[in-house]
Structures are given as C-alpha cells and as structure tokens.
Length: 254
Image 1: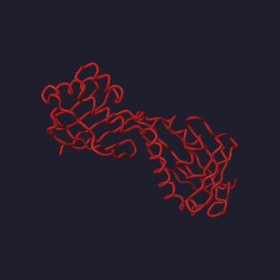
Image 2: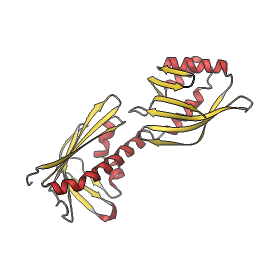
Image 3: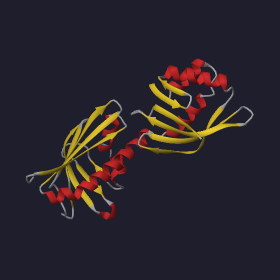
Image 4: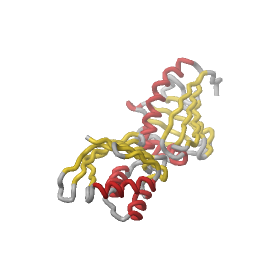
C-alpha cells in the first residue's frame, strides 16, 4: 500500500453494548443494514467487503485485522478509482466499553488531503446512520416496554409491581414528574403505590405510536379513573440503557 500520510478521525457514542455494536461489522445482513442493500462482508483477515452506495457507486476492500469485539481494520477504495482506488486507503474502527454503551472511534487514513476532505461529511453521515440502526435493533421492542411501564402503574400488589418494573427498568432508574424525584427501582415501586393510594384505580395508557431515536423515546399518554373519567394527559420521555432497559423516565403533564 502507498504511504498513508493524511487521516480523519471521528468518535461517536452508541447506547448499546460493545458486543452488540461489533455484530454490525461481522454479519452481512447487519453490514448491509447501514451501508445499503447488496453490501457484504466476509469478517476474517483477508476476507472481502463490498459497499454499494446510492446511485450504484461501489466500494471494495479487504479485512486487514479483526479482534472481536474490540477492533476491525480494512482497506477501502472505489471500483471507479475516484477519489480513491481500490486498496488505497485504510479504515480502522475501535470500540471502547462505556457504562452507558459504547464509544466508537474511527480513523480513515489516506494518501492525500483532498481525498480525506471529501470523506469528512460522508463519515459524519454514515456513522449517524449506523448509530440509529444499532439503536433500532436494541430498542426493537420499545413500544412493548413502554406499554408494560404504564401497566405497572395499575398493579396493586407491591411485590408484583416491583417485579414488573424490574423486568423493564434498570435497578438505578431515575424518574421525574411534577410530584416525584425518584432514584432507584424500589423507591419508584413505592412511589407508584403512593400514587395508587391518592388516585385509586387510575389507569395510564399510551396514546398513539412512540417516537424513538437512539435510545430516547417519546410516548403520549392519558390517565383515566375507573369509570373512564379523564384525569390527565401528557408525554413521557423514556431513555433506555445499553441493554434496552429503561434508565430514565420524565413525565410531562399537559
């Protein structure tokens, strides 16, 4: 390979476990999910990779190094030869574990600054797409989790209520609304019990689809008494951890 004297670096945080993130570099279907249909990768040293960009532009490469789930390096170049010939640049992706997910560090090395500069926005965009694709997989059942959250507010038995919340939320979950400043699962379960005491038989229900982006979801809700009388409405902001469990909820009343 010719001397690679210029490089660009980019770092993004992804709210998913490192092992989950790395699967998108080793599984062809997942590889194609963030590069485009028809893209493939043979995830072994010497294995070929192919990227089909919009408009039929094609990139080819070869895997140079792979250390699961820490690092992958590969050559990167266009079949057209412009702006980089096949084999004429190198991409290295390193994954660092983080308590809330994974830090992805990308370095793309080039032979000249002009080719590097052409790829700055491309990687800004592509890694943004990547972050969303990974988060969508981790949070594929976010709507079910949110429905279970609202249902838990109607569970009368204290132990059953805490068990239900433990199935969908982290042990150190944070919860905020106009009546609550809560830290921890047990305190949350007790607070829900207190709400039931002062607002007996109130039911919370999601209204409409959730809106999700990279581990944060918005869900509209209504509250009604046992006879159906409206008691309030609002929107919750749900934040999920690296495993798709709720780590923070803020309830905004209308």
